Image (cartoon, rainbow, N blue to C red; front, side):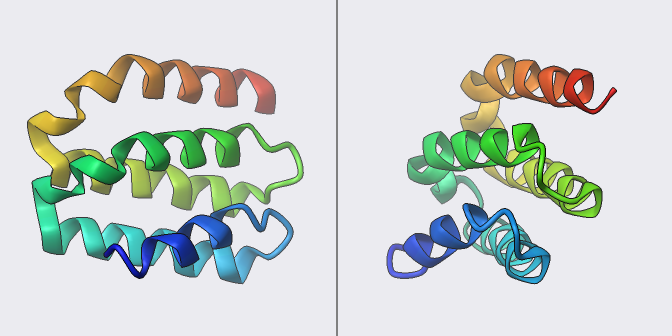
Length: 101
C-alpha cells in the first residue's frame, strides 16, 4: 500500500476525470478490505481526500456516490481505528449534502 497510495492520492485529486476517480475509489475500497485496520496510517489522508472530493462542485454526482461508498468501506474495514475520524467525516458529508442542495 505504501507504494500504491501516492497514485491513489493523485488520482483522487483529478476531479475532471471520472474514470480515474472511479478506479482510485475502487482500489482504495479493495485495499481496505485486504489490510483492514492497518489502514490506520492512511486514514488522515483518506478522510481529507474524500472530503475534498465530496466538496468539489465540479465533481460528477456519480463520483460522489462512489466516494460515499469508499468512505463506508474504509470505515468498516478500519473498524475502531476509524472512530476518531467519524465527527470530521460526518461534518464533511453534511457539508457536501448542503452543497448539492
